[in-house]
Length: 181
Image 1 (cartoon, rainbow, N blue to C red):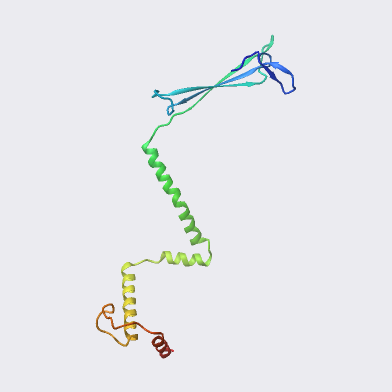
Image 2 (cartoon, helix red, strand yellow):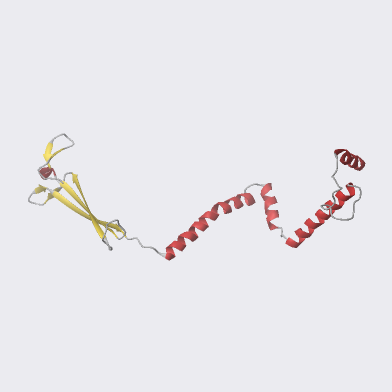
């Protein structure tokens, strides 16, 4: 604690006593409902006392006196769990997590010049699962027919069941390519 008769050195190195110089006593009342105090289920008030050596003069029209000035402040925190606040926080987190995606899309669609024009065109194009499926099956059938033709016209049976087919050698592939060119 602080005794008013204790000595304090001033900025000009003159030794004074708290009683003559003055003292500011700051009292802070801090209320909390979530705390670490055992056996207390309600609100706890912490009293924080700070003493600051500084000139504290009280003047009236008759005299000027020095002493203790007392200031009181009240702070605190009340915490409670809220399901609504929890879900609101989750939604806000989800929205903020999508911001990089939207920013990247915006840059790709509008900030890359001619490339952005290509991206915009591709994004506007309708995607048809049935059309793409039919296209993929047609390409696979064409590839198998081409391969069967290159292998000498083996048109019967499944290719996976036929153990006689070894595949194309480099010589046979070169022969076919030279025929085409």
